[in-house]
Length: 413
Ligand SMILES: Cc1cc2nc3c(=O)[nH]c(=O)nc-3n(C[C@H](O)[C@H](O)[C@H](O)COP(=O)(O)OP(=O)(O)OC[C@H]3O[C@@H](n4cnc5c(N)ncnc54)[C@H](O)[C@@H]3O)c2cc1C
Image (cartoon, rainbow, N blue to C red):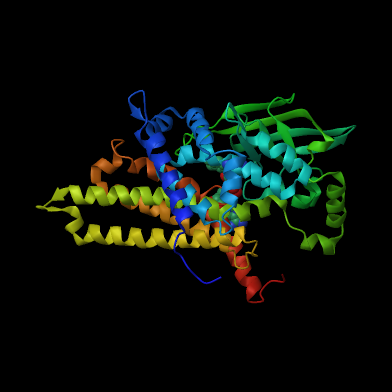
């Protein structure tokens, strides 16, 4: 296909539709005398009402993923996500956090398991649910091979014991995709994913985590004490798991096998990157507006070259980050192989740009930027997570670095 960045009419409509929703429901709607995005940030509460509205209009649930999937380029997804995260990253994540559970399910589940559990992640418009993907633990964040949540085979199923931290939607989700180890000695090759539902005995949310930013998104610690998980809740089934373990015990085959959790994260990274682009753009737009209104020394501050250059750099970097994310999302949507860590490049760049651009936005706003009267302080707090979750920026560099070494013959494939 010829190289073309022109958006189709459908893509433009999807972008405008998502933008209008974010403007109306996140920015304009008032709760207790506050704009909705500020209310959920201040109260650190989950915006169930907005997720329900998103479901009603088609921005949440399986219908949304079916609609977005109709654009084979993946760019519709990128456009919608950028607009919603432009509106509020915390609320955006409350709407899109379940997508990670869906990705985890799709990565390892059988066709039948996907058919059964994917709709249950989202519930129905009258009974909205969210999903969670639980990998991280106190001793296993970047290093997922150290997962210690244990799955032991028992009659008719598995017993899960352990704890997870930092889990988006943890404990409030109906469906949790939980990565556990069946043999810790085998690292990620001894791991499997299980479906744990909120009502299972022995499963609990042990702590809601208070955060710097994205406060409308729920983050929590969850625990498993002898949670019985039926056989059909093991994603991919037992034969596939036994095969994987057998291969892991064979040193040559083990070297070639990949972590399910790692491949899920790699495929979703550019989609996470475009969320950061949405925050950066929001900060940029508010900075342009402020720079045209605020006067010092007799002129609007945009007329000072120091401020104009900041805005010029912000515009340039945001466009660069967006293009990398579009490339990554397009590669994922068209099943291309990520040869040089293109997914990680997109997230690395977008996270850095969001943190840097929101910092510049505070600077442009002077003292007002540091106060809660303007949104730029919130944008800065929201942006930082994009250098941490779904792989820290250092881990993105590690992935890209390894791919470069492979490409130039420094590591075997
Ligand atoms: C708000 C929030 C939501 C989250 N949501 C989820 C979720 O839904 N599901 C889930 O499973 N997890 C989730 N996480 C967890 C997140 O993915 C981890 O926090 C992240 O992977 C980093 O792991 P860690 O916190 O253990 O840091 P560590 O791995 O301990 O890293 C600490 C520091 O060391 C650096 N570092 C580590 N290893 C290396 C290395 N080899 N080379 C160079 N530097 C290195 C890191 O980059 C980082 O700077 C969430 C986290 C947060 C804060």
